Image (cartoon, rainbow, N blue to C red):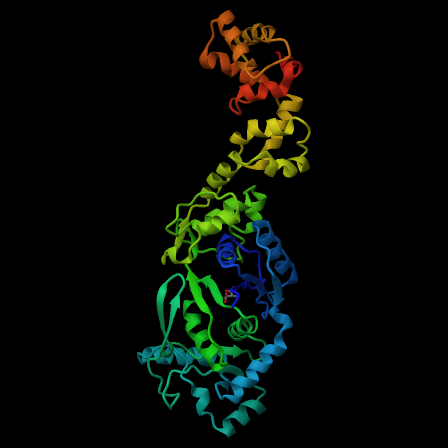
Length: 457
Ligand code: GLU
């Protein structure tokens, strides 16, 4: 059987790095098992889901290097869910309930004061036909609950009923169905909550492995029962730990915090995001991987920790720098062209400046400095100015070879007696206008003799 996974966000916001963790866990799992990756939009909540968000999620996934085999929208599959509802009704495991949210709230409070777990007490099962008729004539519409199989013969007497699975990440897991309320599958207005469409799609789409955040562990107990009620074999489940900030805050699609879009706009490279999103909170060291194939080699769901994966967003910048500092020209070339960095000098330029960049786009500043001179004339003391004039007069004639910087500064040292910072800093300021930056030995050949002399104060 082909390994088949899915990433199933609701398109109600931009995805963040925590969602990327789920997407990448699935993608890498598929990669390692020659499997298929389904992009499924859980968009049954039509009031909050939009096509724009779905498109933006696809864009973000492509940016990360994830290219789904198929893309599905639950909103286009309602008939399939309706058919499943009929099957559940026929099996008498889906029942109509008429309580309002206020009534349910009151019941929960009463149960709590009596020391009972605050789960739904299945009162709807005890309604007489007259009571149902009365609700209906009042215009109340039912919502529908799935009867969890947690009793022997009387649903009003639930008993401990353990659902077990061997979790890809967490190992043996157990959920007691008696500790849960019968889940609402269909709302009063006929729209679906997440549970049923998710299970039906996992069956219909041949999903073999469900890999998602550990906020779904309890849902899995319910969903396994639902797979069984629909006479299907449940898939393998894996629940990874969630990403939180160093202070333990969770991430939310709603706030836009650490969205993939904002990281892209900050100039973070996709592989910096992917490396952190996958490796943090696992037994692997967090380090940048050059591509997803290599990251897949370091990915093992079972090596994921069970506690929250805390991370410091600044770590992304550290990883980003590491990637940029080693990025071959072939990888940077097209993006540099877009930024206006092209021609014969583009490659030596890139190799000279990449070690000083926080983000690839920052290369432009150096390209401008080399092309047009320092943005502002450097502030120099009279003494330094005299020193520089003398130094520029010693600039070797062309053609230059690889040792021109060494030769030139050797001559300057000899003639002026300056050395160390006193020698290099005025030169750096005159040539670049900046107190720090790429090796001057690499920049000098890019400037050429004429370009260098143009910077003589
Ligand atoms: N739409 C659900 C979510 O975003 C999907 C969970 C699942 O993978 O089953 O949480």
